[in-house]
Structures are given as C-alpha cells and as structure tokens.
Length: 380
Image (tube, rainbow, N blue to C red; front, side, top):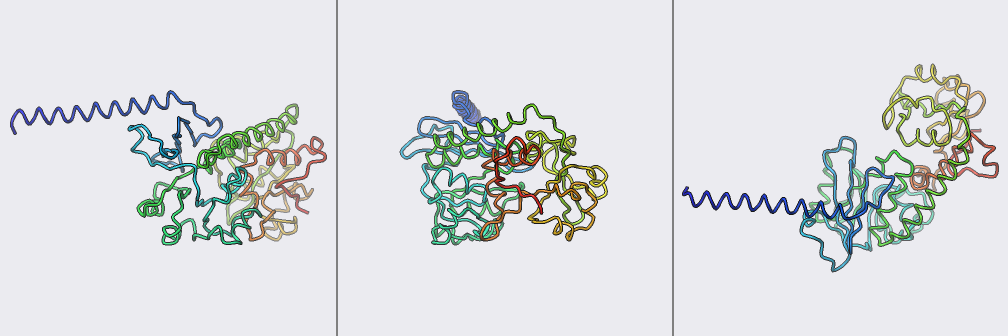
C-alpha cells in the first residue's frame, strides 16, 4: 500500500474518532442542560427537552449488563443527530400493550386506559374499569408473558409494547423487535423505595402527553405518604414483626433494603430481619424463623388466607408463633379480583400511601381510628 493510502486511512480513522467525540460531547451537553424529572425512582430518568424527552431505564433486571435509552418525540420534531442511535417512540401514544398488572393503575390514574389494546393473561387484571374494556373486546388477550402471541401482536400493530426482562437473556423481547414492533423495557419492579415505585407514573405521563397530570397525581401521593409518616413520628417501634410464610421447604423473609422492609420501618415497627442487608429476600428454614420470631407481636403472612385455621391447615407448626395464638396475623394478599387476580399486586405499587396507612392501622390503630384497610385483612 502506498504512503498516500496510509494517509487517507489515518484521516478516515481520525475523522471518525473526532466525529464520535463530538457526538459524545453533544449528547453529554443535552443531559447537562436538562433536569431529571425523576426524584425518588432509581431505575428511571426522564430528561424533558423541547418537543421530545430522553428516557433512561437503568438496571432493568438483576445484574443487568446494559441500560436502555428511548427518545419520546412529538410529531414533526427533529431530534439531534447524537440521539438518532436510540429507539424513537412517537408520542402521545394512541395504542399500547403492557405486560404487568402494575401498569394498569397508572393508565387509569391518567385517564388513558382506553388506549390499552392488549395484555397477556387478562384474568390477572382486577380493576373493574379495565375489566369492562376486556369484556367488551377492547383489550385482547395476547398470550403469556414468556410466550406472547407474535402473530396477533403483528396484526394488532400497537404503537408500543411495554414489557420487562428478568435476566440478560430475553429471546421474546428480541423477537418482538425483529418483527418490527416498538418495545420499551421498564423496570418498576426493581424499585425498592415505595415512592420510587409510584413515581413510574411519570413514564406513562410522558408516553401519553400527560406529564402535568402525572406530576399532580404523584405529588398527592408524596403528600399523603409524608402525612402518614408524621402520624408515627413520635412513636417508638415497639411492635416486633414477623413477615412471610413457608414456600415449599423455605421461609422467605424480606431483606432490610427491600420494598416491604421500608414500609415496616416507615410505619414504626420493629421488623425482626431489619439487620439483614440487601434487597429482595432470603430463604430460611422454619426452625431458624421460629427461633427468632416465636414471640413476635404481629405476623404479616404472605398468601390469600382468610382465617388462622386455614393457615394452620397449611402448616400445623404455624401455631407455635405467639402472633398466631393471639390472632394478630394479617395478610395483604387476601383480596382477589373477579377473575382471580390479586388486588394488592396490581394496585399497591402505585399507591404506597395507602399501603403505609394499612401498616400504621395494624401497629398503631389508635392513630387511625376511623380508617378502613385498603389492602390488609386480619385473619379471623
């Protein structure tokens, strides 16, 4: 190769390098000049620009090897060259498919549930408002989360499918995108802060041009949550609390930095595993749990139980706990929708203020004498 050819090659490499650097600088400037609209959520960021928003989904599943960036742009708006590499979604949306029941309340709170056109296993949805849409055929059943009906989705051609991944291997998501369908991966389920989960309403505000409404709704939730915390601000956490129940041969207790543990802390209860660092849960033997929680004052059981007798029928060893003997056992999973969905799983993430009030009513009933449980139920 002649010297001239080397020079041309070098110039091309340098030109590409400079171009990349300019793009990086331009993109960095966009972020530095915009305020992140998200305050509490750790897995979501939204940067509002003129005519478009930059949405970042951070740590979308445990040990994720990548984050995701989406550009939500209004019609006829041109976004900077530095953002052209990201998936672009035209907003406001007119049709959407979602795959988690936790999203249904956000759509209803913003008054855009009529734009929902599909959901996998629609029996999981409990809301009466959205169930009417399912019953009249406006919302189609599009299969199962792990096996969505690809042909049906292609025929429906929704403007966006909002779904989630559980690890770094997501063949279903890859297939959706290869089919030309617009996909947004969300991560509200990864949030551990009660207010952080609820703040995901702002994503749907951005998708449907309802940013102001989303902010108003979320500001009300913050206000209510803080007012509930103020009720117990002078209380000592004297109630010793056991959480969970046996699943097969393990008892899964929530770790200290989990969503559940945060509620117990904010409600001024002494959660017996508050010193177990981390998020998620840890599996323990029944003997280990009994040793630590035999004398607990309260037991928040997991499962759709109605009575302590039903609980004992599941496992006769449960009767050894003091909370069982004094009938201070509660569950948040006892209220079931018309087609079998658990109301708590669907609605609690979007209304942490009501979850917190339920906990305060359990541990400090004198503070909310006229309050009726939203999710919690005491086992008879």
